[in-house]
Length: 105
Image (cartoon, rainbow, N blue to C red):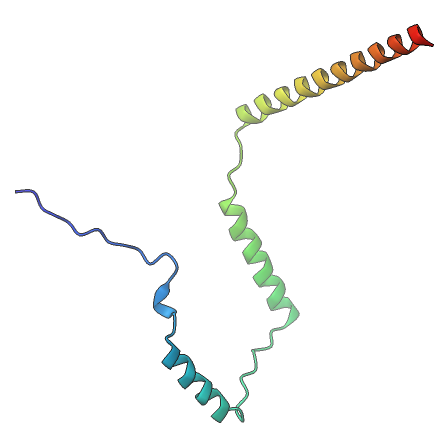
């Protein structure tokens, strides 16, 4: 017989970290009691921050989908033809309006 597999549902929004009302109230009490201890963020030097930034830039560049040479040529030619078509269209409209203006002036 065929096996029936249970569909595994991924927790897309990570709902396991959502707190209930009781947990929130308890946390508020704990925070009010422990106000004497201050959690300060770790201070980093400027060189560490720059290194972290460039590592982020490098990882984002790996995610970029670069077009192939063939597609780049195809899109460039299409763009040039579109620019030529639009410029000719507006030139002819301008000539037409100039002709109409000269007939009635």
